[in-house]
Amino acid sequence: MDAVTRTRTLPEAGSWTVRWNHVPSPRLRLLCLPHAGGGAAVYRAWPRHMPPDVEVVAIRLPGRESRFREPALTRVGHVVGALVQEIAPLLDRPHVWFGHSMGALLAFEACRELRRRGLGEPARLMVSGRPAPDIPSRRPPIHDAPLPDLLTRLRELGGTPPEFLEDPDVMSPLLPALRADFAVVETYRYRPGPPLDCPISVFGGAADLEATLDELRAWRTHTSVRCIVRTFEGGHFYLHDTPQEVLPEIGRDLPVPWPVNEAGAVPANDERSGRNP
Image (cartoon, rainbow, N blue to C red; front, side, top):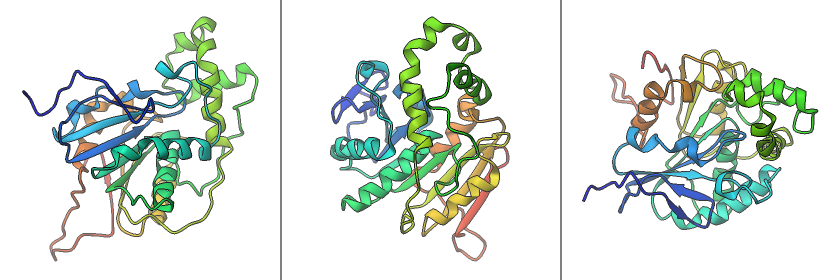
């Protein structure tokens, strides 16, 4: 039997997690949080791009997919508190957190919550498409805005097929989770604290207006060790537009392969383009 069974979907730690690949004795678990409105299915294809001894664990938040009938949570603290409690059984192995957009914010706060609870920190935090948490939003809140304004924002972000946005029958069931997720982000207030002691990898789209290069670089102040910033062609959803380019780069950061300079030292910060690593 192969070391990795790619076809099984195994719920772990309650209904919060889905393992898209089952590794009997994983070297590391990659815990993945979705963007606003996203679900665990966003990460279904990731195992084929990762090392075979890495188990991909997607987080399934309330209010979507098989948890559709559960009320979606609207505050970072509520999401993170419940998530950390549910994910604890999977922390028996070294682990890395990855989050895109809203997911990046939740992953960061989950790492801080793990430290507060004495559960240790991950081997690495990976964030994508999100300014550093202490940078205030440049956008007006829309989680309780009229529907036309919300749909306009979704069009600007991309990532949602235009035909979905024009079909009320498709959008209506999705709106509660979407509004709740926007509320999670828009009501968030950063609370100063010591930087994480794990490295941070930062990924972004070169044309992403939601997270500029300077805003991505600002993550460097949130780790006491190393931070790498990489950009790829594309906008806010560059990650899903060119997975064949982006996902191997994420896989190469597992566990933490840092370049060594001629003097044999590992640089404190590294910045590279996904097109020219």
